[in-house]
Amino acid sequence: MEKIIQQFQLENPVQLPEAIKVGIINESYRLKAATEGGKSYFLQRINHNIFQDVEGLQRNIDRVTSHIRQLLTEAGEADVERKVLRVVPTKDGKLYYKTPTGEYWRVYVLIENALSYEQITPEGAYLAGKAYGEFQCQLASLDADTLVESIPNFHNLEFRIQQLHEALANDAAGRKAATQDIANYLLERAERMCIAETLYREGKLPKRINHCDTKINNMLFDKDGNPMCIVDLDTVMPGFVLSDFGDFIRTAANTGAEDDPNLDNIHVNMEIFEAYAKGYLSTATFLTDLEKSLLPYGCKRMSYMQAVRFYIDYLNGDTYYKIAYPEHNLVRTKAQIRLFQEQEAVEVQMQELIQKV
Image (tube, rainbow, N blue to C red; front, side, top):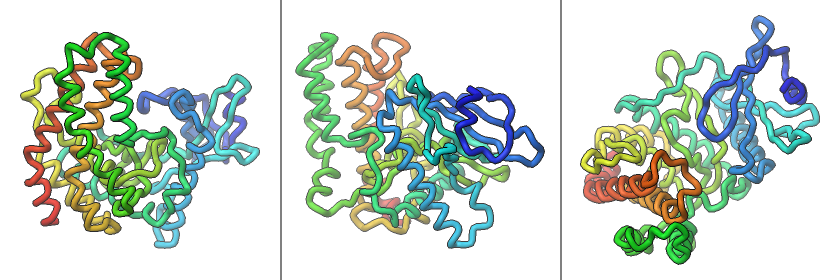
């Protein structure tokens, strides 16, 4: 690994790599400064089985972070380096290093003394909404067409519906007959759940730059609990902003677990929803009236899409998501459908809260 580290333009010597657990996709290491006052770094092996266009992935991250850094500098931000990630290039100027064996590695400057949280509170939801809204607002002035899809069709619901039709036709694991009611339920709602794609084709709904993994633990906070920096930028790509809004609510405002076998546990935490919406709308000043009105739909859209994705994997024989038991993906599917139903039940309330903000 020393040879890999030597490929990057580090400003000072570092200690031996220290493995750290950050997410489940990439392999991560902390490189502590070996000299007092020196910079520490964050080394990652990129999972190129998932992110097959590593060049495009890294170019996306560099463009987004460079754009935000420029905006912060122009605004007179005193501590830019703690507000946005910095990609460290290799000695030959590339944004990643490819080993002779085909591994891909990258380095960021480590943001020191930063905290991240796993649990959500209304206060935290408000701050998260404010931070993600500001992130999207900063990127609203960057042309979405300059970025590639780091995972093609990641949040393309029409593509997911096509995958569902294919999975049902193939019935690879022989599970279709016993779950036909789920297939019928999802397909009956497919057309109206794809309204975002329809509005985009009609020129009414723009694509902007999305984070595509808006969780509370993808933000760094300072010691006083103030948001500093949005991290985990692997899935930054063009999309509908309502999907980013909806995906945060899907995970943070669900009173049950994503794979909860007891569907009675699953409801929408409206306190979390309201706090996040207030924070988000205080900074997402770029939204059109249509985008704002579609935010509750964005919540339903992401729960529905995740139900479709879990069900596809169940039909295919559990080839994508890790499972803990044979029916795990089916349990996940039913839990997401219940969340979708709960969101439908409070959609008018969500819409009223959005309009009041």
